[in-house]
Length: 609
Image (cartoon, rainbow, N blue to C red; front, side, top):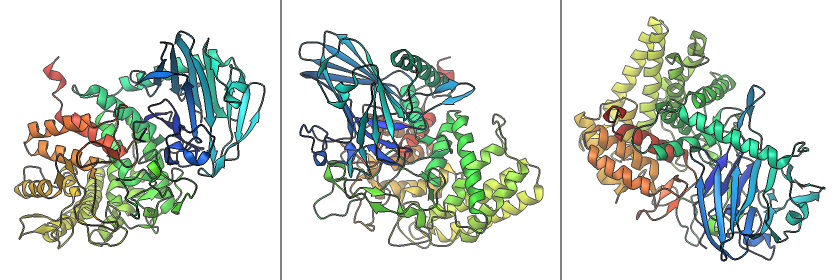
């Protein structure tokens, strides 16, 4: 079987895992999403089918339920939840149901969301014969976890976190990987290294009911568009799974080092670690969820952001990316014991982008925060003190709006004054003016509006290419990149402005490959792009709709929905023929694009009420 991205995420905003189309855990990190992969088979270069116990051929780093004489397998999420149900049928018609979830519900006045994974395995028909293989790894695949066995539990020791498996089935069946007849339900709770005091089947079934109820009640609070509701709900749930609720951070993806395209021998792979909080990506996530009314994610992220701004201080440098605990140093290194997705290494830990200058981040900080000055729903509306604490971010935006940076595409080998970065600096000053006006600070509103006007004059003078009759991606340049389409989204320029119409047309002609969009077409530090960038295709869909080409936008959006995995999700990149997804998964950018486009393109609820 060729390894692919047909993966189903489960999680609870503290724990997360990816389960493959065979019902196997192939990726889960502990103690946090950016920690050591407890299940690492996704990046071991194999498919986890090895029987010889050789960890170098993919048979370690997984948790599988192997059914003898397996014939078919069916998987689906329980409606409006991240709870996965897998049904495996053997050749005689015997059936096994596996229910996978991470507990999340309110208990004792607070949310219960442990670093824990629950599997409930039960026979649906006949007497299937099964084998449980639970083979975690430590130190990024360097070795199997050490095991100690108790009367009804197994401890997995040696990594950043010790986890304990508790079960009401024979523990030796798991320890010895023994085949056994599944004659009654068996529950497995893999979680903190502490005794599980209650009856495990009764308790995990209660947890299942309460977790199901939590997610369905959360979904019920969403304001979804009339059309494509199931797709939007699945994207929203998954974006919530990418939030590390303890700190409020939102990670760009749950994985590291899924290559952006197939790698030829001797080629340097575009493999990056996305398990961190990019201020840009987080801004887009809260923006999309705000469209759906999910204020809880916004409020928690604002807590992360306010603490981060205080941590940096006005004399510090704002990085584009931080750890989920606000760690500033994310030193990039290679995990030598993981050969990579389909063997296409290297597997990277950390991300060099923490060293970059990317000046669009000033805009993303302010844009993420400004809603709190207007939104009466919030438990903690922003105050005058919050505004004053934010003004230094605007100062830096004004100071650096016409200076070269690495851009949102994080070029490693060159810098320029990027139009998108300057536009986001404009947005920082413009929105500070809005917030000041809301707070009754007329003098500060006048101050920030004047700064925004100055930046606008600079952009219109230096980013506009009169000879080509369109905006360029850099000051004084002639090149294109897809981020120019965002000039409409941040309200820099109306979509029907002739300058923007010309820019949209040029971007589409220059960067579209079939039905999909590139970020940029020029060779970068690693050569020419070989796949399209899903978020940019959604940007094009938005721009087409806003410029009056709605049917074309709808057709392209429907095509993008067809590219999703069976879990209803997207990764970062896609092949030009649209047949294969590449890049880290699930990618928040791509899911943001799906939500935004569905919200823009859907028929109104008034059309059916």
